Amino acid sequence: MKSIVASPGRLNYVANIRHVAIISVVVLHCLLAVPGPNALINIALVQALKFGTISFFVIGGYLFGRQNPHDSETYLRRRLTTLLSPWAFWAVVYLLFSLMRDASFEGVPVVHPPAPAYLLAKARWLLFETGYWFVPNFFVTQCLVTILWRKKQPLWLLAAAFLFSTIYALNIYTNWTSLPNHSEALLGFLPFMLLGVLAAKNAQKVEEVARKTSWWIVGVLCAGPFLAGVLEGWFLHVHEGLDLGASMNTLRLSNQLYSLAVLFGLYKLFLTRPRWKLDGRQLTYGVHLVHQPILEAVAILPFSYYFANYTLVYTFASHWMPGVVAHLLTWGVFSGTTYAASTMLATLIARSHWSGLIGIRTRQVPRQAITARLESEAGPAPAQH
Image (cartoon, rainbow, N blue to C red; front, side):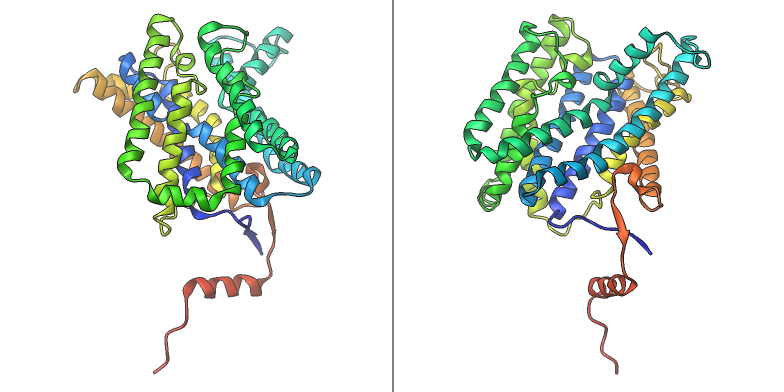
């Protein structure tokens, strides 16, 4: 009998944070696909959702620190199987959807061999301008952490890593390099994974700080960087002329602080609410992998026109309500459809023999072990009278 087996040491609050983070990523991508007519509202909404990426890097470092693998080669080989192999499959699926969209809307031939320049452009687009930039960057960062953490100088290492992310943040304004997007910042997310490892090594102290910190302080820590992020995004979008995605670069200094503050708040929330279980442990990575092809498929349906940032839902709703409200309704329908479809598909794959396609490792579990686990979860049997 086949069963999904959770990795040891992965706690409920970690799974819950990952669940919230992936929701923010999916909804954010939907918003960027169909931005509304009001630039300030777009920027505020994007900023509110912009904590997911950095959260995943911190969580990745936290889990690495808890596992503390001694055999780095075996660990990275396992990550290659569970992380990169599923990514490659779904990246190809997404690329095929994109080619079909190009053929449908832009007249680019798919049956006949496309020009090499077009294929190279599509490959670069896939790696640096879509959500599929994340996994290769995450894997490279994890490799660096696996190697560098053995140096036993975590504070100096963390300071040097944050220097890299600061340089990337300043590069948004100075253009020192030709890599303005966070998706091309190969070392930009290293400090956040190292920070996660350091948090795991000092888990008891971090937990004490989280429990003692009042919600008022957490609110201030989140609100300050949020307002700064909105102002920074507005400046980059309106005054520097960057598009919405580029102006809301994940590595902006304001967003780095905002992401860490929201992550700390989520950690405190789920740490003090141990009974809350969002059941996102196995499906988080699956939703990440499948939501981009689903978003592409949904976009081909009547939800979205790619050459006009309006939808049939928006066109209908705008006749009955203000444009901003109509856009929020459209965004809600688009996001809800995409997330629900992604979760359903990831769940079906996780329960099938193809669960490896979303990075879930399975094994044969003896029937006696399953029965014992079910009995332990059910509690003691009622007394017989």
